[in-house]
Length: 265
Image (tube, rainbow, N blue to C red; front, side, top):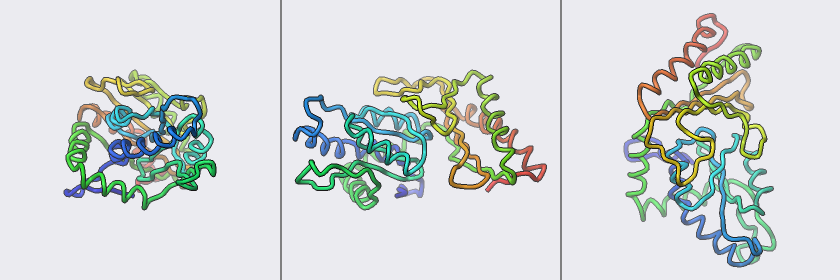
């Protein structure tokens, strides 16, 4: 479900979800009140995409969710929600505009359990409802999005898979040498199946995270659903930081394109 504003600019899913969270949280608070999680206090959790704007993640946390980074992949995310439901993991999104939730099989009988799945109609209707009631929240979300500098995810197709690992390793080394912290694992120690590189940002973001200073985030991954494709996305608090980071990546991939070993698609 891709959401555009009146100017044709995408409202990133992570920002949209931050606005939807109070409604989702309210529902699961009723689930908790019915004793589904026993004597545990109500403490809902969610997963966010490795490419999410850090500002949106802070908003999600401030809306009342514990926020946790997760790797891409529809099946992986749904399985993570399913197996972590007992720990109150209930919600997730990807920046590719996919939304996930633990939906009850029966609203009137929670003992039948929950299905971890996508439901475009549910999220579309909830988005329409929230936008009609709180258009100012969407305006604020776009202001925040526009307050940072971002190059949306772009792909490079390598004609021989043997080039992909050396490329991503070289890019990782460049940013590590420039002081960025490299993350390759989720909080539980399992593989992120991507490389997240940050400067001025922690791996664990919560409602207290201060993003007023200078920061840079670079996400790179090898696509598992496309042959020979690597992808990058960059976000920065400054235009100079964005331009420099994108330039460093292109300086690597351009060599392969110029030699006829790859192409931008």
